[in-house]
Image 1: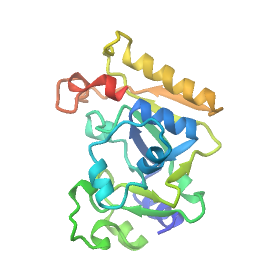
Image 2: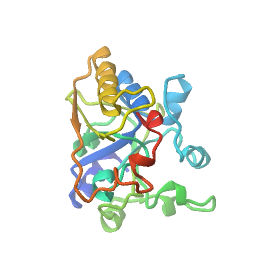
Image 3: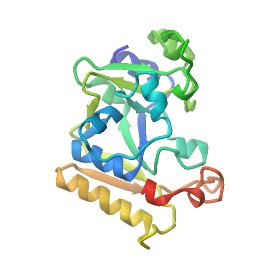
Image 4: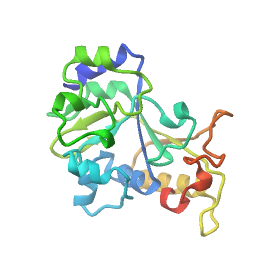
Length: 227
């Protein structure tokens, strides 16, 4: 499907923003490159990025060069930290209407970590706009909106890049406050490459488990890896 097809389908489900979560290290690379980049794009250029638990499956299923986004803020909706990182890029869904040439947009039916080698393409992805309208479930964390082109890259729009940044309320091993360190690193990467950047601190719902010792809580995470 093309961007317009997916935009119209997601619009019927109230999706106004696409989200991409990552670590501070990888997010700084995105800012320096001026766009969201695939794992392959970053690796092939020898740029900094942290590993992800899904890397092996991404290579296995031929999606290593794809750029993944979500139709919801998983941290907010799941009331837990996002496993991919504390930096959340928020992208207007209208970006689907102005993509690089020859960019295909796919929407996964399920998270690729649940795919099987024997799956047919229509078992992994919605094939038509009509199927997407009927089958998309707002809030399903596995139904990723995926950008695919030869370069593995989607540039930021000319407008201000919006980031929502988690505050784990803990220090890194060097004693520096994790949030302040992340804010400084992201701001520096944007300034070096003339990116207009707005960073907002996430204010969690009282029911959020990201600071409570839950298995996806910052209390149990390697903050130096994430931040």
